[in-house]
Length: 154
Image (tube, rainbow, N blue to C red; front, side, top):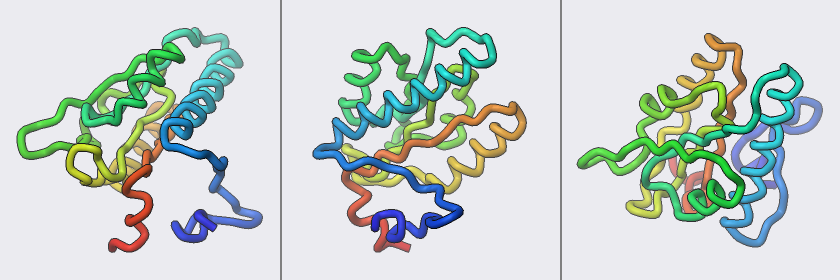
């Protein structure tokens, strides 16, 4: 149902995946563990070190991301906020991505202001970087608040 709401591909070309949860903190923990384990498996398969994962996100990140990073030994690389711009800058975020980045976490409905990160731009920039580097760094959209209203904005 949610995949249809966001016009995700379903059926034979299905690209939407997910799991039912009871809270946003649980969602971040489960998503983070999945991302970390997929990254570790890829690194192991290529004989590369897999002990220094990181996540790139904005400094406006909800505190649960900091807890996730501490609990599961993942470095949290935060894009600094600027005066008058209180969400993650997609250009700066993609610049911080490296071979140890398990995902870029975009906030859809910042705890500070309710603003949305430009996920479309972030995706375009990250896809370009992935294409150039041969990596497959994904985006996790934390839409705990904004996800309820995003489908109704154009």
